[in-house]
Length: 279
Image (cartoon, rainbow, N blue to C red; front, side, top):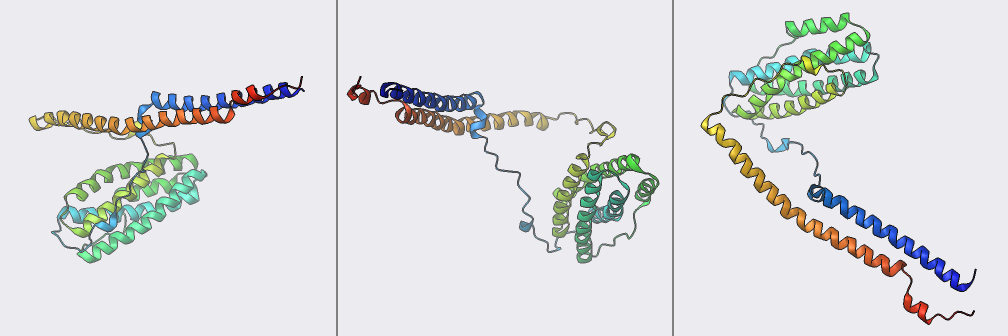
């Protein structure tokens, strides 16, 4: 290969590299422009409630609802712990076994929390499951294989669906410090258990009770959509303000890459004019 041909080949290779880099930059820019929200949607992660910020002094009026809530938390552990142990022993599905192990172990922790709260507030707690819970445990003892799996998942998913709104009510209404903290912790456990149970893939969602219909709109309720719309509009405006500088930065970066690539990989025409072929 002659020196001139070598220079030409090298120039072609550099030009090809430049085109590839430019293509990548342009493609990235196009994707961001086509999806403008992606530029500003930096996922911060889902926050965990800061439990250490809630006091647990036991102070505050204790209502009958608070006492009933503590009783329900205790009852949940009294039957879900043995149910999880059965899941580990009777199920042939590794996923069901893992779900049972996790939920059972977590209820041991939650049970210690509710018993500590009851001692502080002098709330009497039951020592055995109620009649319905004993019936569910009996169904599980009598079942085998996939029948057991379905009963275990269905009964626990239904029970968690009932306690979930009860926790929300206590968390937002109780006057007592200790019950408030217990409700917040219980909420985290229940949300975790709902997710674990649904990860089995066999939850019969169609059989779950439906939410009650919305209440008739009142004048104050009717004003809520307007307020929400204004809030969304403000949020969208803020999003646009945030995303615009980011898009500008991306454009500048893309052209910067292209400029650097052109200087780095394109042949220097001035050098070629000074080069004299020996042929």
